[in-house]
Length: 327
Image 1 (tube, rainbow, N blue to C red):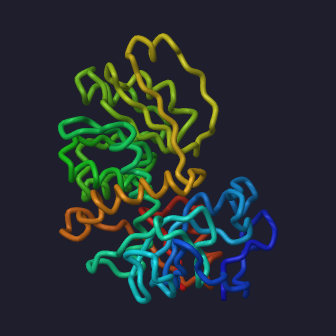
Image 2 (image 1 turned 90 degrees about the horizontal axis):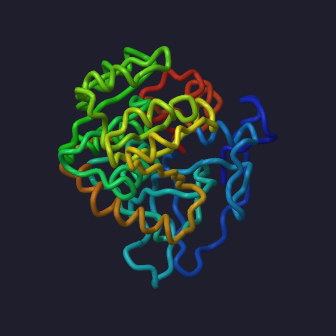
């Protein structure tokens, strides 16, 4: 089969499409998926550089965390999966290839309203967003949500999910144009943070009360401002570290506000933990695509053969939503 392959860790020139061995036949609860499209994520950029190795059992040379395709083969004992079924899901690696062997608990049916490219833009962003803000941070109807990097894949997913569930939304971005486009997705309050500062603007918008839940996709440099932005008993979800992974914390603020600071990752979880997140996603999120309340956030679609162009585009920070590779 053909796969995106990292010849050695480093620059974009180390990416190629290579013939690699096909996966073995499915055993137990596994299914073999013929991948039609796969999402390109910032984690893939880090993996290419050798900065984000996959868990044991996955090739460091074949990236890819989400996919959409068709069941190629499955054992008769696997419920709900038969040859030809259109499925999408998450994996710890190797999704950017023509075939993927995966546990059946990590896939679910694609709604008829989505094509493969649209479906490939969904799993990583929407499962991450829903798990973070609803399952872990317990965001509820009537709450307020602040999303940093709101124009990113996870940011746009969280924005749509929040609006579909009656949540007041605030979003930051360093790009004014992205904030304008986020208005089309229901963003209530846009905060320009080109200088990295947002807390004073946020507190002014909330009358000094602050925010119930913050979804932070930026990291280190925002931490102190995040604490100041929280309401009493507010929850801070740490998901990304694009501005760095280290920050100072004023413990007195966290204690006084009785704040909850929660860190999360999806890739490193056990299959059992991921399967639980996928089940909730299938129950609570997929129907929203079916009835049109939320939409996939596709920015650009590249043939897999143009993976280098895809990496350049994602690294440019010009993307708004997800970048997809088609096989």
